Image (cartoon, rainbow, N blue to C red):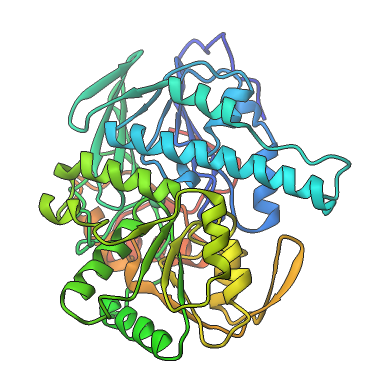
Length: 465
Ligand SMILES: [Zn+2]
């Protein structure tokens, strides 16, 4: 990596470096060097395959002179490396929409907790390959990062040196926005994650602002969402499992997905499509906190405020870990919503360990599962999984509800890009996708939108703007 400097070249040359989410969907980090300031768009954690996760331990030299961070949204693959950045000495502002600041605070503390817990467990059980497993960062690092948040309401303009930053809501998740950075006439637009036109909770994405350079996500760049009635499928899964005397466990992202699942379950219950007496447990302190934030920022949602306030009605809250363990050993039919969403950590692992070996139970994954994650492997049909160093047979039925995706599919991504104001951008970089998804979207942008210079960048690549 080149040395980045406190001595800018005579004519400041704007550069863009892709530091993550270019050969996968995690670790979203794009560095804009305006020649005067270094601004990082997103600061995500790498997840999934081990070779991706190992990158979390590296500090890119390009970030040495960083001035500010701007977050598109709170998901950990876009925000979860912030405590590590702060641990490495970053003391600058972290700008994001007010709802993103609130959600990210919850997510970062949880992420730190998981890092600490994993290290502790590895040390206790001795399955770390290292002499002593250390957490990537601690809760203290996360708390410090949170103090550096500076809210930027969408529609308002922020100045960082000569650069102007502007956020536009894109659905997807409470507070999620596209980021536009304008510097001396050069306009860079970063999509963040684009939501769906018919999301359960979020309104459709707003059209993007005009731009010279576009960075667009491609999570579902090679897919079209099947028109599936997720509510009907969930009703059938829950009813069938209960009839067998089994339980349903829903590994769910605590922020966004858990609220969407609660909304659907409440609607199914109200309509009598699942038994009213079937207990529903929300076993995730973070999901409970996030639900409170969804209520507080209810104006940003498409759901009526009254329905948002009833999300938790009749839902049994599992607050502490001891109650969670008791729930694990109970044998009556129930629905358990617990994090994490791809079963990579958290309390849901105890439930999977207890429920997966019994064929009467059902495990339901909702939404995208990152390659290499336990969720992806189970959805692909793996019949044995290792949890906390133990082998667990999977005899329960495993379902995948794709309809719960919070990501635009290819037609929706193209529709969003089509809405870009003004002329077509000079250059487009397709990021945040598995290689096939990114390349398929690249071709679609060229062929269907007729845009030129569309590329999938390389990890670590720097381009001059
Ligand atoms: Zn996201």
